[in-house]
Amino acid sequence: MDMSIVMTGIGVVALAGIVVRNGILLIEFTELMVERGMNVRDAVIEAGKTRMTPVILTASATILGLIPLAVGLNIDFVTMFTELNPHIFFGGDSVAFWGPLSWTMIFGLGFATLITLFLVPVMYLMAYHRKLRAKKILAHHGLFQGLMYLPFVVQILRLFTPKEIYRN
Image (tube, rainbow, N blue to C red):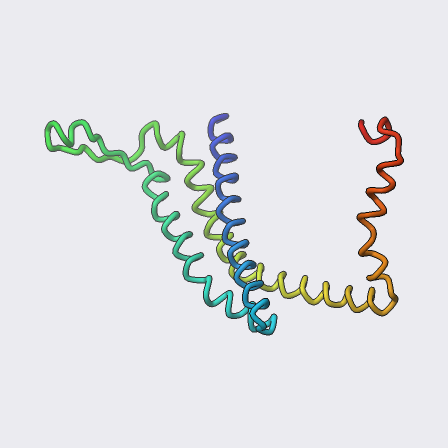
């Protein structure tokens, strides 16, 4: 039972890597379109259409590759090459070890692919509009020009602060 928790955790970590990569690719392509002068809304739609195929293909290939591992498909390669009898069977000890990792990644990728394709573009558009609104407010009140000097002020304060204060 303890090993299944560990393998599920490893599956979640592997799943997080795949999902984050898909989200980064989608956002990076959107920002590339915006830099080329496309409207933000159109760039989000175009990025979603363009990057949908690679995201779905990556997820479906991973899911289809993990199904034999999840159901415990075993092939005896020794007898396959020596006796020409592969002795294919389901179950065994490998399912108890690799099954939790496989099922975690299969169901996680199915759900996370939908989240990546639908929720990430919406959240990007919301964050972009919020950033524009914040820039307008700061520019209207004249705070934006003052905030650009903030990192320098922090560094100057850090130079004159005793090292014992921020060492711990």
